[in-house]
Picture 1 (cartoon, rainbow, N blue to C red):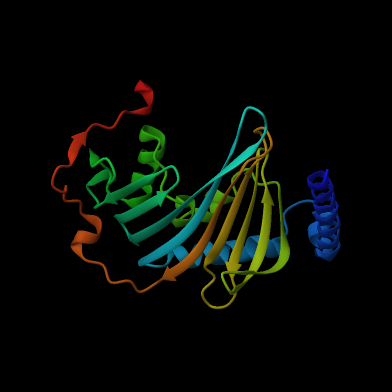
Picture 2 (cartoon, rainbow, N blue to C red):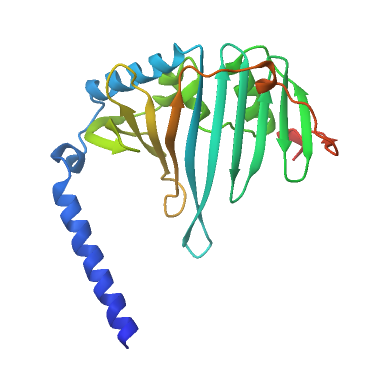
Length: 256
């Protein structure tokens, strides 16, 4: 009985708290203006252009994936990631978390995926540019590097594909960094992005909501560290199999 009372009180408190938060939201966010606000696209393009102009960088993120059970209940899985990139054709992406422990290497000629836990790795010939490799990995192997849409040179065009609404929610703070908070809507997906203020308009957070799936699961990426002047070596992007590692083959999507 006491447990039920406490649960009801907690529920009432949560409802009241949500109402207070809603009242505090900027009018623009509550109203969700129709169309695409030019200020939102200007801020987004400044960010994607800035990142595309960086010859190399490393970024560390904290990511959360929601999965909806048959019952409708949402379950969250977390992982951390680190990406090292050198244009035009070098990439290393490391992920470790609840569901995955993998390292992806791209040296301009080959793409290697390594699972450190099981010591399995697979290697495939890859195209000569970063964008071509990312396309090939996604369409042929079903491999997607963390937040890879943001690193394409034409990231703005990719992000704005089929977008029907977009506006500036207001200001926000991510990991202690003051940002512009933007929200966009496409036919099946809502997404939000937080962009650092100032001369280095770096993405600081991304949230994607899949509206055409039951209970609209979300995927979120929070940037914990940017480094625009990293020190890379040849070994950063090259893979040398450790002792006991076993080579396996990629299974193309068409054969799954």
